[in-house]
Structure formats: structure tokens, C-alpha cells
Length: 432
Image (cartoon, rainbow, N blue to C red; front, side, top):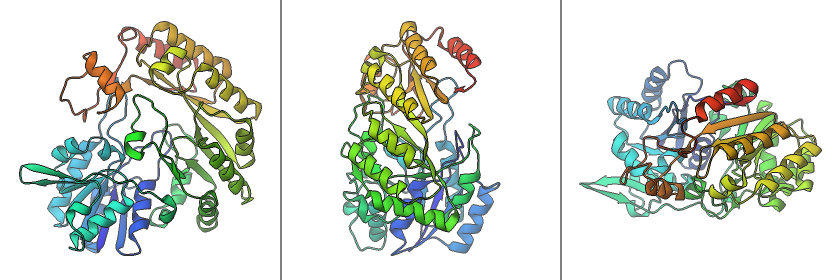
């Protein structure tokens, strides 16, 4: 079948993200289907390009990937799915091909999005095997009941098939970067005015229990991974083909499992290529040996997912680590000469003036290269934070939370915005 995959995202926060999920879908489909990709990121007139692509390619199925619901800004929230609704309306005007929606954001609130977007089909969860099964169902080669994560309207009701995660990631091919402009993603800057990086995923799944995070819903708690040597081979091939040298590992925790992380660093270092890369470090697993290997393998920035420096707030957020582990992580990174960024998530359960000051003092003492500040915690359905917000009357029962709602501790609501404004004035490298 002729399948058109669309990535409508044009958001360039920090750096423009190459849609690695769409690239993975395309790679999984290509052996059996003819696949085209339309990436809106660098298009001046995406709708004109859409019309041209529909006319030239004549797709039999159109897939739309929804990466983000909103900007997670509690003060000035901006939603992105209305643009996807307009896109689907345009598709209906120009093609008879069925429209199937998926992606991380879709999988968080699928029923509400299907109602809003008026798409033909939705696919919840990991899409490589699900979309292949969907195409077989379109051809009559597989029953609709066998399509993992399928969501479609049947009369007045919904057919919802349970999603199924890919059990063995090593059976998936490398992402089809050739369908994009990877060199442009490396050269383009985002809102942080930093050089671009090409995303790489080596693992899926997260064993942590943060009360607000959707990763466990999307990927499960069991960690699955590609072999380190295979990931290193991707980097080598992409370097040879496009001269790519800058990468960002999008794994939720690069430093877990530790044995895997060490093996991956050794495999990258063994390439002996001039690569520079960044990754996300969880303070639950500080490791001196790993941080040494990070630097040897070309890591130039560690993003530390600390979120707070308060023992109370870390506990209430369900982070699975305490202030001592945060401090040890930052100390070990500094000892190895590895630049690091930190995150500061203010306003969660238990937050007070004292806990905010404690968190700020910790980061000021360690001097991160950059601090990403967020005020208020986006509430997603079905998570522990959602249940707490319901109990405290912050959200209404029955609210699907498609439109953004935020948890903001009442103890900070009256002064937090002025505090953050003063804080960023003192620290130009603290971004809000």
C-alpha cells in the first residue's frame, strides 16, 4: 500500500526534534509498503506541500503523528491538537484515504482526541507492529480485532483493542532518517539557541514511579533495548552518510540499567569518531565509572532529571531518589568535567517557600550550565497526581484532561510567578 506519514510538529523548544517515532514507523513499514513522509518542521507553506504530495503520491492511507498536546506552561498554555484537527479537515477535502492518528500525545488521551479530531482511526501505544497490522486489516488480510491499540467508532460505540508493546526492539530496523533532512536538524537552532542534535532511542520502558509522568503508560515498566553494538552501528552509518556528529539520546534514563549504559558508551567510544552527544541522567543511579565512560565516548552534556532539591518534594513527586543522590550526581559530573543541565519543577505536592528556596540554593551551589524551569505540573489522566488533584478539587471528575490542567500547590500560588521572574533575572541561564 501507499502510506503517507505526516509529522505536523513545528515546535522548536530548546532544539528542533527530528520525529524519530515517525522515522521508526517508516522503517518498519518499508519492506512491505511504499512509504512517503511529510515533515512540517522546516516548511514555509506546509499546506501547499501537503496538496502537492497528495496529488503526486496518491496515498491509500494517511498517518498523522501527534507528538505534544500542549506546551506544559501553566501560565500561558498553548495547545497543538487544534492544528491537527484543521489538518485532518484539509485531508478530508483532498483525499479519500482513511486517516489514522497516533503518537505519544494521542496515546495519553486517545478517546477524547478521537472525539475532537474526528479522525477515522486511532492507534494507541507503540506503532511499529500496530500500524503494520492495521494495514493488513485494511487489505482484508487480518481481522480488525487483531490490530493492537486500534480505536475506531462502531455505530454509537467505540471499538478499543488493547495496545501491545514491541517485545523485542532488536527486531525493528534502524529509523529511516533518509526520509528526512537529518543534516538540517543538526544545523538548525531552537529557542535555546543551541546547536541542533539528532535524536536516538536505545531503550523503552521505565521502572520509576513518578506520580506525574506518562512514560510508564506509554512504554511500560520493563526496560527493553536495542543491542549497544547495533546502536553504535547506526551512529557510524549516519556519520558516514550525512556527516552527522551531534546526537541526543532520548531514553528516559540513559544511566539505567547501568550495565547496558556502560556497554553502550564503550561501543560508541570504540567507533573512534568525532561524535558529540547529550543524554538524560536520573539521580537514582549515580555511578562514577559510567560518568567516566560518558566523557570518553563523547558526551558533552548530561541533563540531570532532578526536578527538585527538596527531600520532601522529591518524595511527594515519587521520584525514587533523594537530595543526597542529586548532590552526589552533580558532584560526580563536576569531578569528571562533564557539563550538565538541571530541571526545576516548582509547585508540586508539598511545595512551600522553604522547599523552593532549598531547591534553588542547591542548584546555585552546583552551577549547572542551564536550568529548565517549570511552574505547575501538567495533570494527565489515570496517574497518581490526577487522583490527588481530584481529591483536592483542582480538576473536575469526568474531565478527560485534553485541555491542560496543572497542579500548583496552594502555598505557592500567590507569589511564585514574581519569585521566578526575579530568579531568572539573576540567572540568565535559567530558562522559564
